[in-house]
Amino acid sequence: MPTIIVEVMPKAELLDPQGKAVTGALTRLGKSQFTGVRIGKRFELTVDGPVDDALLAEVKTLADDMLANTVIEDVISISVLDEGSR
Amino acid sequence: MRIGVVTFPGSLDDRDAQRAVRLAGAEPVALWHGDHDLNGVDALVLPGGFSYGDYLRCGAIAARSPIMSEVIDAANAGMPVLGICNGFQILVEAHLLPGGLIRNDHGDFVCRDQVLRVENTSTDWSNGFSEGEEIVIPLKNGEGGFIADQETLDRLEGEGRVVFRYVDVNPNGSLNNIAGISNERGNVVGLMPHPEHATEEGFGPDTSLAMRSGVDGLTFFTSAISALVSR
Image (cartoon, rainbow over all chains, first blue to last red):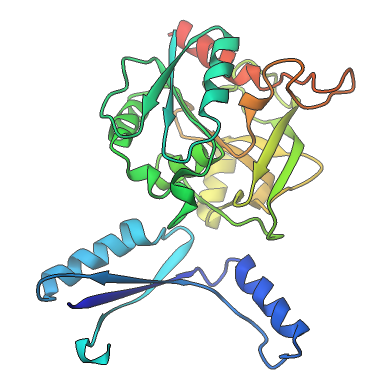
């Protein structure tokens, strides 16, 4: 079944407390080469039928209206997972 | 006077809000998220809690509940609507109030008796306070950091729509120390602190007079009743 991937990240200008906590943990582990971590979300939408432009347009609308809150987050990418890769 | 309290899956303070409504002198009406019916109420409270376990984003799934289409229509028609904590997050996700609420800047859940300054006494939920009055209201949240872009912040400040502001301590990193805001008309108000937890002596925050004697939250509910009576 085709899978559509939607990736959402907190806006770059906002503090990301989760990412900050992980950055702190990495520093404590001595991994100081990693100077920053930001944490976002990945949605995998499975569909029965074929993925066409109309469906992708629908996903785009859904991503902006519901999957992300564009006040605090950005939709980074919408892509179709290659069926052969999984 | 009948004030509805909507229960969503994961609401926690719906019964407390009903009790606050009763203590203020109105009749509480329990409403269910899955219905398309406001049961003829005169005002609405969206209570605190963790609807849908805060999945997706706090309030995001609840904001798309069946009853929210009626809530949005009623709010746009001028019905007094108060969103408390998760209720505030639901109002923001439903676009009835601007901005967003994100994880506290320090990363921790916070629970404290919080001093607020009342900055707008013309809304349906704050008309019983005096301008600049400082009140103590319990606050408990993990994702209460209010944010908005600069243009929105400027508009909220310029139009006097910051109704409540944190005093002494900013508990969650909210921009401009914002604790609660209103819509343009002043009938929809949302805030992170919990006025329903400061409505009866013996159960409220401590005051200089006696332990747990704080009842500043009661004025939110009596304000809505006054607003309705004067219409």
